[in-house]
Image (cartoon, rainbow, N blue to C red):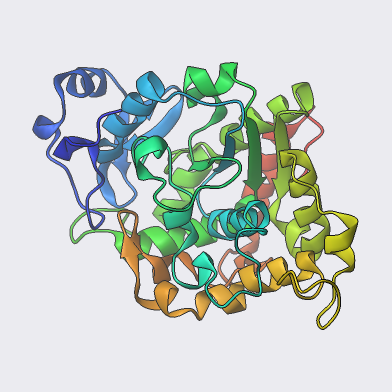
Length: 343
């Protein structure tokens, strides 16, 4: 996968991109796609039923054509603002717990954001070239792409997919705050109500939200051995249970010795108190958001402090009117009817 062309790399800040600078193939495809304003960009383009900004479109095409999945890969998939940073941290700490004990003073998560440690498929180019010095037993790769847009090699391989979703009301509020921070002057949605109406219509980054969620939910029912479907609210309520569930699904379950290890006992392996608890503490919002790297650091996806807001369940009550909440609830009920899914 090419990572050398300037058109294939995301901008250092969220910026507009001159479409004339994109490769010819991307320009031709974009010219045929429906587009709408705007969510921090002048336009979003609808590709395979979902919305993308122009600057990222070439990366999507590139990874679809060139990415070669391995059976041992683990894709961390999500709709934006559904707990991606947290899930990536939990999974990195879990998969690498023997190389990097969660109590260790030199744990990579203390110095790097999880987005640096678990590269984005459609942002960071070929994971073979971008995964850096941190090599997990399983190659961890993240994506916001809907299931239908994943590279064919990922769909045909035996790789595992761990998907996290969230209540659409909290998802919208988190997405609104994030996009409002990074939008450019004279671009982007004009106000909260306009953003809400567009989200309800499905016009949002990687939206429609409900179609994105359903694409993975259906696969989790048809291929439960390959797709694990998680809910943000359930992980918040029982993080230790779900860390164990993730480890089991990936194929690296916690051993009895790890479960029983306590500070000041055992063989001095460095695993400290119960490993699952330590992973949860290491990756909790309070700890990660207060690390210097997450206060002042940045990467191709932007400033890390923009990724941390409240991490609360039910924060939507502080922003949505009863009518807005009822509208989202109605859409969710209608979209998910008959699929056995409740958010």
